[in-house]
Length: 166
Image (cartoon, rainbow, N blue to C red):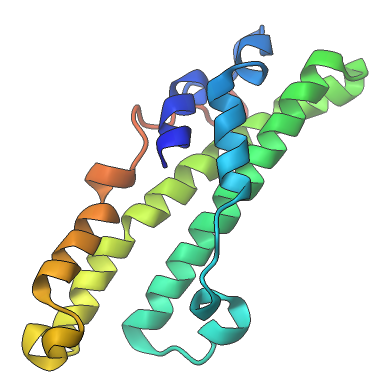
């Protein structure tokens, strides 16, 4: 999250004519590297998530979507930046035309991550809240998780201004 937030201002408004500043930025390198290391907890893996029901299933899907969108978005954006800088003209035009899609996917990934807290709180209440979970999952633990996976913590600012076709 921190790596993406640091690099986000470089791409939030789309790519400039000179992409070298973005592709060679340490912030971009950290975002690409950290997104490549995003773990998908075993319980949230596609095979294991099939056994989850109700709120747990939604949360697993949201996290998996975040991890995949973020990882692929950064990887494809970085490849596009490199192609724009040093590829054949036709390849560079293609890469630039699609870079906005990758920027949008990075934004969408973090928006998705920010929804987990809401789903977690709603599921906790639906399944009985503190009375239903007791010491196994306290209200304080749920509150801390909801703050971690919230719009205040995870949404990217400024709002993505890059749009396909821009």
